[in-house]
Length: 187
Image (cartoon, rainbow, N blue to C red):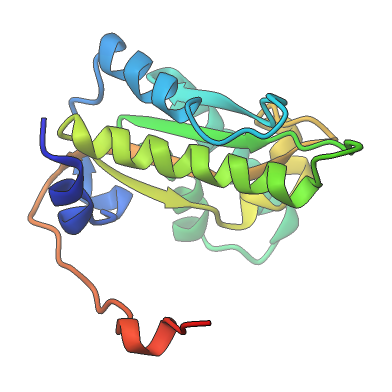
């Protein structure tokens, strides 16, 4: 397993279309999900949960997104519909991180939502540490109530994102990163 500092220096998001299998083993998936649940959680509220899409579930989810996209976009082309049908098929595993923040007397919703984001990032880092690549994405379905409901996200929940996990099909390229002097101030 790589040193965490070295891993964070080289971690890259890989587009799902540049992923293939095999995906995480059951033991690796359990590790990834366990680490996704080990994040700051003020008040022990567990303000997030996970939906795992693997195997045929990816195809079923894609069929739902294709249908809904077509209903909401009657002018959609066959290529656009196909892209929505295949959206979960590139990576062998997709994990939806669901934020289930609720009003609380001491812990603001914003803090609970940040915990869901930390959970998603832990999943990305855990996948990379185990030798996979990952990409944390949203897209229209992450904000569309009909899509969310059809994918199992409750009325009082939001989606922090879909994390696609697989193996790289080619070397990943780094992108420009912020210059610290541009983003750091001292008080």
